[in-house]
Length: 164
Image (cartoon, rainbow, N blue to C red; front, top):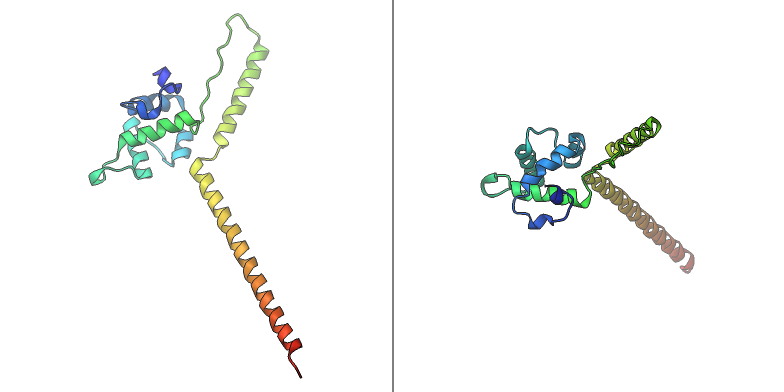
């Protein structure tokens, strides 16, 4: 399982990717997965994959969730780094410097706090699209104003140029 989770094998080549999702669920905080996939809670791996399949529209005939497709999505996200996770480096047992241990704990807490603040990808996409819509609206309003000003200038020229 370790070699698969390290990303040695491509997600498409794995026969039963749902088997490895259990390892991902054990390593990653549920809070981060809930933010990333928009799922409030789940009981086990199968329930998690079923909820993701429903959420992402991966359904088979009769509305049955496609657990295999959902597990490939989660595994692909894991391999591409969309699911935040890290492991601390091993500590040398001969080194008993409590000052280094405290610094290490502080650094780990900093990293964890940064990870918990990372917004999920769907949220970022929604925010980017909303900003693009606002910018398009501003440009459209500016074009309309320019066209209106151009029309007003044309009328003024006609009035000035017209013979008396």
